[in-house]
Length: 428
Ligand SMILES: *Cc1c(COP(=O)(O)O)cnc(C)c1O
Image 1 (spheres, rainbow, N blue to C red):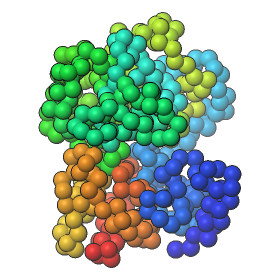
Image 2 (image 1 turned 90 degrees about the vertical axis):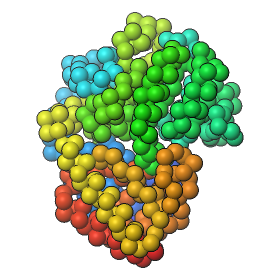
Image 3 (image 1 turned 90 degrees about the horizontal axis):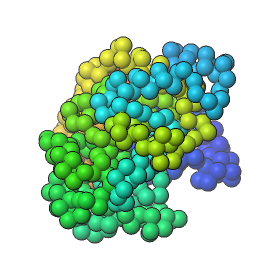
């Protein structure tokens, strides 16, 4: 594979942009080799600047459930941009997107639009603290909720631990109120709530984890968490930035029938443009300025171009209802990986639900961060490179999801399976 042009551009980019990238994982550090510079995308495919073509399973990290440059989404963006890209005043389309979200997501009675998932989560946490008058927040090990300070906390030692900063530049005082629990361990949550439940403002969780690779909640886990948080007056926040409109039209909460107090959204609702949202029970949302005391604002919030892309994406999903078809395609891929490794003797655990999937290179069942971490990341890197050479673009890190879109055809899936068999045989 010729990557001359990508290499040249990466050299140049590093002179002007830290690490040559505007988000760290794009630098391919976890898999080695230089990153590819992308020229364009269409449907399930992307082309790099050297003209190599790939079947893409990154999908911009989740937003592109309809594939790249979906004609209706592109048309909606063009139409909106022609009328002006931003006003800093409310447009009618914002009501339409808000209504679509309220009608789709069971927990959301009112919603506020922002410009990223990070911003949605940051605002939701502030609101939960303002609403409850409590300071402490709880997150889960391996859960990612964007890069706001108080959520860049990792667990210290022990089962239930105080957050310590996970990044330079985050004062310990800003993570001191962030408690970190192991995912999928209801007893750990119960113990913590029994000790200090009335001091906790909120629990934030990816109902299906997507940022330690895909990790599926144990049966009853989310329902138990719902019951426990209610008992202690803790606001339960589902971070559905990945899972919203992905696992079903109403997200993981619809799929599992567990309704949180608040929900954060991003990725799909922007159709590939910058857009996030947080919403929830009316009583909580009415605490937000200008009607309540919790401040939150944004120059580009509800941006008309992003809103147009979001509306069109949700409309296609609502009208076409592709979820069963997405699930079937992704399961075919996952099952084939499992049987390929059985033949080659490589330890592999495939976690798949709906159109998201992660193949962990480990013999342990992966149901939390500790087990995810048992993966052989060197082996993943070799697999990644083997796939890339054959025209399959996977996430350049073990701890991410593969995203299948409605644009992936059965033939794309078959080609991917074929490539995976070859790649696994080579590294076995
Ligand atoms: C991507 C993601 C975020 C952050 O969204 P950005 O738009 O990157 O700021 C937050 N939570 C989850 C679960 C995510 O996957």
